[in-house]
Image 1 (spheres, one colour):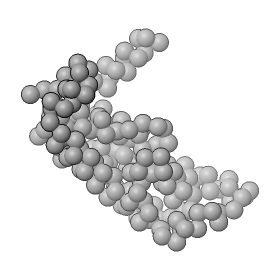
Image 2 (cartoon, rainbow, N blue to C red):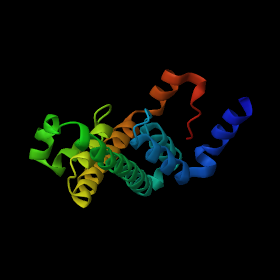
Image 3 (cartoon, helix red, strand yellow):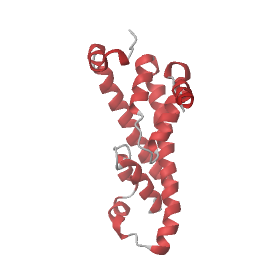
Image 4 (cartoon, rainbow, N blue to C red):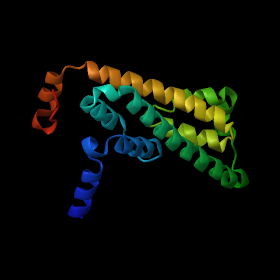
Length: 166
């Protein structure tokens, strides 16, 4: 078990695997698994400040694709629920449509929103567009805000756990 954990840590090492790690973490965090991608995005950008936009783009694409996995799962669940239950509980989402997915970035409720959109059979391309816009704005905002925090504050907060460059 110890060697598996060490392999995973080694594989996700940002300086060596970089954008591939950001992609995988952002993709997985957009599924129904409880995980956040912001630390990986921030960490990579902190190590490579010139890669701000490419990192945000990679994270946005990966996170949107993960959201679309939830959408597809929701679409599949619709077939089962339609036979056995009602869809009246999410009429509000059907009424507002794909723009609700601008909120797909929110913790706790964002991932299920993507699944519900699939379950309600909202148009997939429109859902993906709104998901991508919301997630892009989240990555830009969160990362920019974190970059404005002085390095001294991060060092004081995390001590020797975060070796920040320059």
